[in-house]
Length: 130
Image 1 (spheres, rainbow, N blue to C red):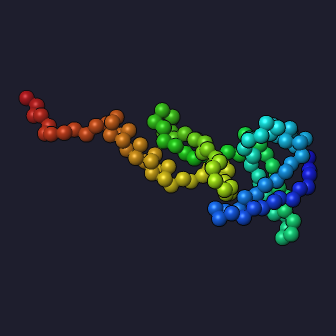
Image 2 (spheres, rainbow, N blue to C red; image 1 turned 180 degrees about the vertical axis):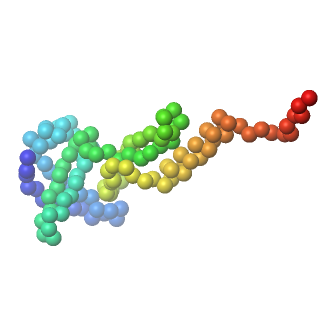
């Protein structure tokens, strides 16, 4: 389904806020008639003057995820979805596998703590065998 609309921009000190009115038929197709639902917007640049926008319900879009340490999984890592940012001005958001350095450091600390708890070091001297 294609439709043409102009996007309105409001400039604020905290950043630019964009709004787009969509037809009710499109909102019903996306399941947005109740309002307050998350939407992902992909901008595709066809050439310098023309761009097309793909509007999807967030549940239908490609989620951002990362590898998370979990000792119960066979390889020790599992995919974990990254929750979208919904507070503040809209910013670009990744899709597919995302590298999050802070979360990686937390996972490394969790892995080392798990190893220490599972395989504790010996303390003191070794006993002599008799």
